[in-house]
Length: 314
Image 1 (cartoon, helix red, strand yellow):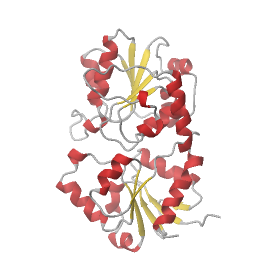
Image 2 (image 1 turned 180 degrees about the horizontal axis):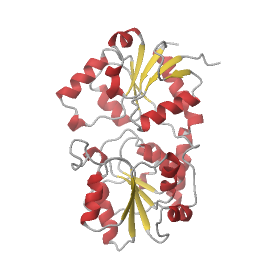
Image 3 (image 1 turned 45 degrees about the horizontal axis):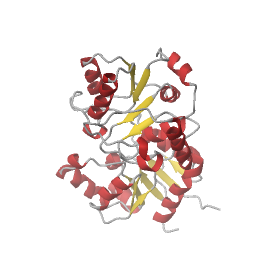
Image 4 (image 1 turned 30 degrees about the vertical axis):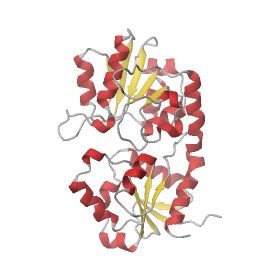
């Protein structure tokens, strides 16, 4: 029988995926998980950038696991490195979701770095009938719906592309599809989509944008999608790879984060000038669906349990 631990899971309260992820761990974990009680065995800094919200004397007295989702090399300046090293004094173990993040973090710290991918909640990411979902969003069933659901614009000015997310790569791919006489319609959600929207408007590509849909609507947006494109340069997951795989949404991705853990090689692309995007075959989508089963929340939480047991030496 697994010994129950008291785990304080620190979430950012930013209405971002970390908040949902922390809530899911609270709901499904065998351990006693709290977002408010610091009387615990382990502090899990799920949102590492918010670490200063916890008093240093508390961090010093506890075992601390810190999740680094990803780091952007060209943004890791002296200020960011200084903050990392100040936090590092209190961290006992780093959790990262993929090898790229592990390699980066291991060059900055001598603390252990533990790779555990993200889980996927199949209670949320369900399959719906594509034509019915297209109808719900007023999309033609004959259109090629190309989707992107992640922020793409820097918050500092709401016009500069967030290059690690590759919005320029996404837009280039959409424009190539248009050049092939495809009846393309772009489907967007999420905060800070100004860069992509400006690019689409500049060349008159039709799009539908739902800024902050609820989670069921997001699942249906995946199922209305004929091609999801991850054009990122740096990622931890992204979540979209797992969510597309679970909903059997055709997806292609750059080689980032967990892409190679889930997607077949044929669905991973290098964004060269000669690259022409294509919709994966049904067999490729089915392979991603098979691969993602390992990451279903009921199958995968035990890897997190082992991580927390490791940090307390149990």
